[in-house]
Image 1 (cartoon, one colour):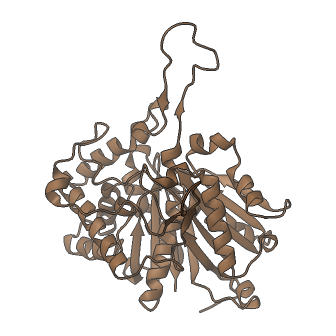
Image 2 (cartoon, rainbow, N blue to C red):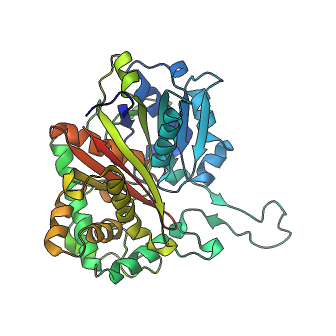
Image 3 (cartoon, rainbow, N blue to C red):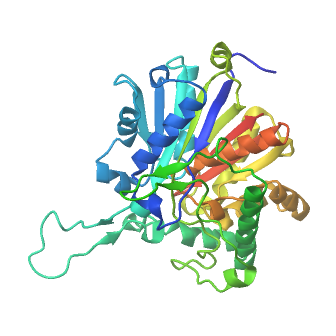
Length: 405
């Protein structure tokens, strides 16, 4: 039953997600965020002064540090928001752009705001090498550079690379390298079919990224750059990475640039403005678990979301679990199936039906917003229903959202 205080998404948009070494790699994540912020508002004729909060998720701190800090505040000013706008930058690893949604909705429920713009943006290929010794100076000899992206873990403080943890946890749940490669192929094939069927298109989930050139026509990017044709034989030949027993470049996502924005308000506010909601947010939840067991975290968050709403997994027409690794999707869906092989297969068939980050890419701060809108638009195509979207984050974190169309 519809209620006036329902939280609804009235606009949802993202940029295409880049490959590692293409034209988007030179666009600051702040600028990518400005693009989606403007587009999300323009689609529903909302102006910057009407938006109370901009909550901005990003976790590639070394990249946005090239523009110093507070990327959320910088983006709001660059996007034409008034100086009085309240913004907040959040880093909850890959969960960040669902954290922005969850906390922003809490502010609306507390009547501290009426309209929220939930944003996520990162440009992983632009992350610089770090020279920690340069401040003191090097009198003689070589200077060490640290690759911020290498191993993508937290080894400086004694934690393992996330690929290493994911691989070991997958094996503990009986999920082999071959099964992970198979999911990698499935993701690529589902994304290819989604594009062939016209599902990822400009004007719905996607907006174009236009890059002016000094000479000649601008570069126009209108689709995700990473999807590719592959095979199980090709995937099987790839070496594992970072000491992981199972994770390879084929069953892990490419490092990408990209941004997402979801515009949220109450149903009452949407009706007052004559806006038709894309969907209703039934609940947002967060969890944390054992740091090395990140691959299990989406399952825990999904169970918490279902418990909070009284809904069951069988009520979900669609499931989105971010493909931080194939291991994450397979471990979490197996947990949700309670080790029932038939049920596991049923769950996998409605999980990431249009593919996922293994093919699309994973600009970490933006991906939680992406899985939310991907589920939203697909529910609309299927005539409505419920969907749950969940994402893992470094060191055993997760966020989940249940939406209804």
